[in-house]
Length: 422
Image (cartoon, rainbow, N blue to C red; front, side):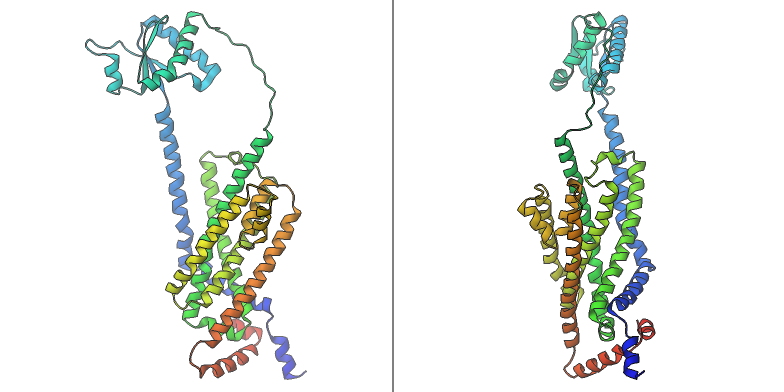
């Protein structure tokens, strides 16, 4: 076997080289101390938001409990309280809690008791059961006149003391309710997908600019195909992102369920929750790879972090417009606008996730995923070509020959040498 044949068989394929790059970047980031703080970053707002929501709900519950004081004789107050308890069993929150008050001291008045905020009373009922008098602000009088009148009438025997048992013919939900609730699920899914993609997509840029600054990327470009470098870095960052999402998702789920919330808060998507979550992961991966390949192309034209910030800002704004486009198209499934959102690679993951929440048909997802994967390959090819052309042309004119020679020598390395070098 000739030496040329040995060199040819020992070369890494694009997928093998991409795996070497992805494994190295993934492990280097995963076991770094900065990644631990990266994981903690979004957890603090989630934790603070969960605590604030729980405390706010508790405070609102405490402050929204309405009590109405009864300033009548002892016998009439007892009759009013008994009627209020009876009606509460049948009507629930429509009947306020009632509390018997001690007679006001001499020189004191019911108005003074309310104005001085002695207790959590929305109103005070005085007079008699035949002619109750409500002392309260005008809005509270209008609100509680009916319930107080019903309680007084019940206590006098003018209303039934027993109520007939009412049976019901239950309907799970209506078609309009299902559609409206699924739209809400689609909106929440789109929002989470967009936020995660934009939050984590910037890691590709920062990693590339760092390696471009210390010339590591030029060594890699000379050693293995640039397509493999791009693919490796994209999938390494995707793996790191999935690890972060898993940690955040488990923490958020724990807070969600420990806070007393249920999945019934959101309507079940048309394809069901298990398949919806599976498609969400796939569409996040596709959206991340598409956006990441675009960011890598931007990194090829940026020499410093400042350049990255200036060049990535228009992309971020365009991505916002794409997200709004997909959100607007979601309201009209099957329309030309919705089909256009599905066809555009940058909006396709958002539009298809919304479709999974609204429609049960599965075959369009297979076509969309295939189309998005093809777009990832094309964008990686274009970005790699642009990056390689700029990298190989960087530096003084005399460096072209040495870089060309370096490129040829690196291409002849075997798998173990490339892995050791990287």
